[in-house]
Image (cartoon, rainbow, N blue to C red; front, side, top):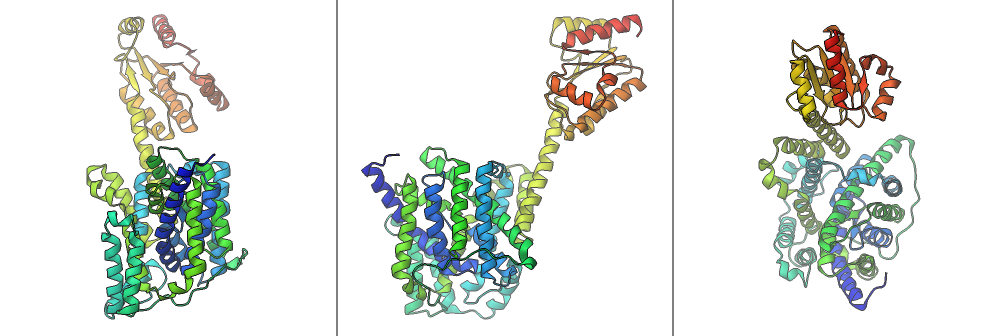
Length: 535
């Protein structure tokens, strides 16, 4: 694609703006991950560049995100601070994302119900806030959400007021920085700068300390038999979470740019980026919504803007890393509390009482499991519960779509036959697919609407595209009931797939001994003739 000078200027300004916004967030998220501030910057640089170069969302800015950092921090605590094993999980996550992209599995990630995504993301926001409260007050919390939560009463009794003033000031500026001022100085950068100046000049509190400058060391995967399953599990969670986070951000970018991203290509780009991030000791990341929005609003349209954003961060690391040593932990904690607040799905929470009650309950269940159990359990339980409720609703809809005739006969010839039969012919028109959810009630529904005077039952399959074993057993039950009651059973509208399935289970001959017909009128005529002859 040829880039005009105007496009280049827009991408340059977008990349510069996104890079400046990304700087304080990368530092803060690096510290929150347990891998350190520089790891956050390395992650933002490498992933930001490679995902832009190889990805499928041209205007997207990638880097460390809150959800990914929560997983990494939990893994870091579980592995007793083993950096090499954490980095191995990040490398594997990148490989898994590449596989997602190559196989198209990434498309399935986007069908996670919104209530599950909302509860999950809100839970992550709550976790970030809980973990940062200790740092906001001037103390280093223990690893893990529950330990950090139980640690809060302890730190409240021993508040470092210097740290608290720095942290709350940083948080307040990040929350209230005017949008119009953000065109000149991004809110996160202003908040971090002012918080740091306060910490250095007036309110002395714990700081980051000396940071390495220059290029990072290379790391290779390491495997420990005792921790192997934990590392694999974390890699899968990181890959799935990063893919979901990225594709959601890609949709935001699509809406803003009126374009359409390539999901599979985007996941391959993210996978390449995260695999290399692990090799350079960085924090894994994903498509970052806020940074992407900033880039687009500043004019960034092509992948060049994402690459420029990464190069801006690289220049800052090379030239200004020593100055970052004076950044107070409390200032970074204030920024991260803002990140946590932004991740919480306030838009849904404000309107949740207007929607289906079950969606709110599901969101709350996923939220609680995310905070108090773990991320993978929360998503797995959420998707399972959502699927069960969906199947129940579909089953109800399928059962309600079954038409019991003669009330709904469509053709005059059918109506005439039904009138002559005087209620002795009962027809059931299956209105669509028969899932295993509907199969359980299918036989009961037919029995419930069967009439005492009925002598012939016609089952119309013309709208049934396929049939599974559950539905087969339900139809078999209908046939057994019909024989027990002395009723003839006729089938109509069976397509080749349904016919083959019935044959494979040895039921076709039994079910169709009174006849199988292409057209329902033919089945009705045969049933009427059999009744007249006393069959």
